[in-house]
Image (tube, rainbow, N blue to C red):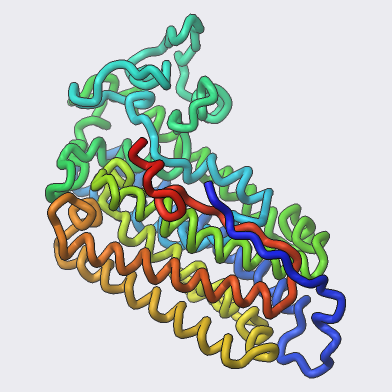
Length: 420
């Protein structure tokens, strides 16, 4: 898999000019402040989600299930805007899999349709169904799942057998529990799990008590994980300390690493171009809920947040301050305008995709084979991301930072490998 690399001049004189409109230290402070608030908002919306889930469990009606689903979707908005912090911040990247790993082999968690199959050569836990089985016998091992606890999910089942598709925790495990499988392929419709799957007095899907137990445990675990990352970005927290230890040039490189890697390899490549090439709904990020268009849109908003030093909080906790955009404008006004133009063009492409989804055509339908118009909308968004990455490369050079490697993707760098 290809990475962008830049061999650049040492940054010994980068900040010698006294008239900068924003000091690098202030830019990094804003970057940290925005991270702290985004994770705090993610935590707050996760607590709201927990409240909706508690109500569903107490009164398992269709109305309460819909309310829990709506709370899940709202909880995704601030979280997805944090993803520009992953690449370059090792603390975030090492932690992120606990809350946002995907895709997942949902047969690990609960019942699935017969079309899913009951085994996989790559994954012994493919159809383990922990909700149905208090004792799991997998690959010669016995797992005691009598009580479905946060410890079981986090320390035994998450990435069990060292298989990344064994996702037992985080947003997508909760998403699967609330929606169930989306069996519509690239046709209209999301998952349609009934509320009675959580009704211990009138149970459908069997094992309702254990399903409730799982849903409680995985939601509590999401909250504790978000508490951890919110604390890490507070002043004096581990993530702030790690960032500060890199110095000013290292910190700026971290911002640009996050922007470039999310823009190119992760979002344009792995999350979008790959699924478009394969016309495969299994490659969409929020696949059970059909919320993928918002997931991708919020990633784009998150990239803008860290560049412009502004965060419009969905909870009203707005943050703004010194920005990378100001540093670039001081060094190269033409490039600053180019970068803004590219970021705006990308936002417009994703707004078009979002509007299409809100008009009734979900993202998995857009990437479907034969949907030329939908495919073109997604491809335009991919192209905009790739184009803005070339300007991010130029920012790295103008700021004379040390070598940076952006994440790559076979779907963009070596398309033939995707079909091998």
